[in-house]
Every structure is written in structure tokens, then in C-alpha cells.
Amino acid sequence: MKMTYEIFRKLNQKGIKVFLLVVGVIAFLMMSTNILGFMNDYSFSSFEMLDVKFFYDQDTFTLSILIYQISNTVNAYLILHAEDYVFILTFYLWLAIVLFDLLEKNQSVSALVILPLLAMLFDLAENLVIDVALTSGVGEFWATICGYLTLFKFVFLVISILAIFYQLLIIKRHHKWEN
Image (tube, rainbow, N blue to C red; front, side):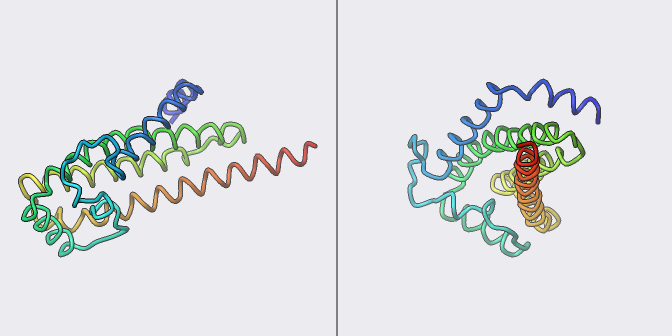
């Protein structure tokens, strides 16, 4: 854990945090709006992706993959996932650095810093399973597991955001006591 803290201390620089946030926001905008026009098929929306559902079962996964394949939206999905990979690798890392910074300011650096990283890992795994299913298929096990990967992604994301807000409240309360 000590090595993890050292890595976060090195990454905890304003320039790095701004870069990660800007790239993450741009990737999100590209995914949600097709702002740069990478996709020619405007009938497919990122809001219809499995990734944005809070949870889904094996039947929903299998049916969705089949619909994407039949409707020729596999390439559109893969383009959105390429943008999503950029978002995942920048935004969750930004969240982890912000949480680390707040924890350190509160002199309570703890294992909470891994929460955004867990969300990132579940999101990456979810995307990989979906990509493999779209291009070559997956078995029942992965079709079942994918919905749980999505669920855990959102759970760890929400807990990360709540932890950040909690740390901000501690800082605000501490600042009030000093004045």
C-alpha cells in the first residue's frame, strides 16, 4: 500500500489532474454526442448501450448483443467503446487522485483511494466482455457475469463520489472550526 501512496503523491499535481479531467470530459462528450462525427450511424445512441444500464441479466445481455449484431451497430458500439476506454483510464484515475488528495489533506489516507480504481477495473472488464461478445461471442458464464461487472462499476463509482463529498465536508467543517 505504501508504494500505491507514493505513486499517488507523484500523480497528485495540478497539471496531471487537469489533463486527466479534460481528456475524460472530452471522451465522455465524444461518446454521448458524437461531437466529432466519428460515427456515421446516428440511429445508434450511447444511451442504448449495455454499459449505461445499472444491471442486466444473461437474457438481456444475449438479446442486446444479438440486436447489435443484426442491426449492424457493432462497429458503432466498438467506436463508442474506444472512446469509453479513454474515459475509463482518465476519469477514474482522476477520481482516485482527487480522493487521495482530500484524504491526505484530512490526514486520513486510507484504502478508500482504491474505490475509484475498483470501479475502473470493473468498467474495463465489462467493456472487454462486451467487445468479445460483439466480435466473437462469449459463453453463458460471461453473459451472466457482465451484468454484475456493470453493477459493481456503478456501486464503486457512487461510493467513490460519496467518499469525495464526505472528505470535502470534513475539510469545510475543519476550516469553520479554525475561523
